[in-house]
Image (cartoon, rainbow, N blue to C red):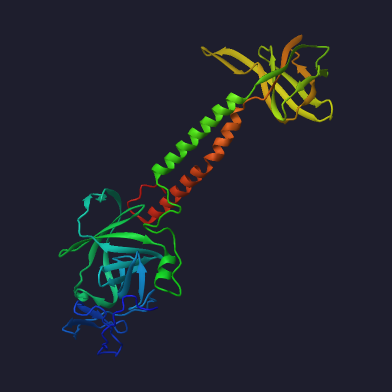
Length: 420
């Protein structure tokens, strides 16, 4: 890739292994590390002074090479150094690349488990109180607190790399980024980090490949990212629109009584068909409500109901069963069931119809009186509930996915508020 910074490095050779040691930031580099043998050099007046001891270079596949350039967040950076760091006392390791721009200065690119973060040192001091951090009116929560050691180094550094002590790091995160406090006995530094999508890194630095992501990154954003306030407003908006639609549909429903007639079932007529007079359904295809009111007392009543189109012979069947029981027990009155039953038949075309009823009464009584009512174009609230559930599927799905994503993010933190 062509160097967008267009500064030619100073050429040097390692005195121990003759590996080229390019210096891109002349007159500013304090120390230089050979990537082949790990030799450490101090740089004074363009002269290299070999130091003892040196880094023991271990086999590692660095993701990027010294000297390559790329544009991140509108800034042309050049890679001038690489570090492999580890959490003391654990097997957790990650890579950190030092990026340089002659105008914007230094930035750091960190990668762990395929997740990339761009970090810039802060000139301001964030407010840290126990497990909370505030910076520029944004709140961050403590995610990790650990000691960092440098395992390997390669490239140019603005400080004596062999004199860097182990540091303690505190990582505070929110859904948009990271605040890191890095400190030792001699120094305290603060950094602000943001997540960089791996594909952006690959394209920016023209890399052949990048490591696959493992798990959820410490500050990896959930895609698509919708904050809780926005999601709440979406839900409120859906409910308000739904409510307005239900009021509208209820106001235009005619709820017209088309047929109403009463019948008495006796021992001799029970379990026998009753054919009603014909009635007319008008105004296109709409629903009807069939309602049966029945005089029962601690008893039950059943009737089959078949709606018949006189012209086409089309049949629409329903089963209607009412139960009503009550009593007094342990000082309290109780009741269950109703003395009526109502059911909806959807999308009934206009035309002339009649009902075939097949009533069955209880043997406890001699006769049962019931009334059959047919209403046309009835507002059905349950349909509105179904519509509401459908409309809320996305917010519900998003909330569940987002919650699970955050739980996975905090899985490796000692400060998680999520129950396992």
